Image (tube, rainbow, N blue to C red; front, side):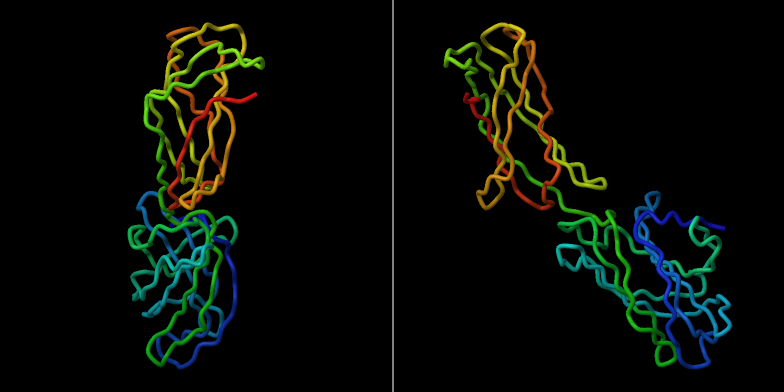
Length: 262
């Protein structure tokens, strides 16, 4: 007995009419679901075939599959042949034990796109014996997405920090920057700036520098300030307080740092 994690998608049930008396008397298609299998790095499409008495059975069928993400990119299209060896007993908290077909798609076969959510479309058929209409299922937060690219200023970059009167109180040298794009659930871009305070001492207040983030079309998509606290001259820092929660997968960004203006 195997367990269905149902990590993505919602179980939906629909009765459709089959035709013919071959292929183990298949009459209905129902109980389909979709999930990502972390251990094997692939995806499963589950569905149940039953006879006219609602008894679950197995049959050799073909499955025509399409996956379209929320950005309307078709990230997968293919036909899978299912044999009786691809059926088994699975359990879930929602439906309990079921006898289901398990159609597996390697993660490497699905194109990385601009959204982790989308829709699964598939139809089950076998020659002229079995023919079900195409059905669909929502996919939530588990499709592969593209990386982002971030371009930085030329370093080192010296930025003056001034008080509200315009007097220079310190100089911050940015010596480098790096980024991490977290694709789990909701994509999140974290930018870390690395540097050193080369003049000035801590007076109990923040040293403030500003940033702007531009997309590949030159539009500013985010801006803000970085607050560096309690730094003395020659103190080094590594600050990761710049977090972009709505970064677009596949986008190329430019990140720039500026002197803070009162």
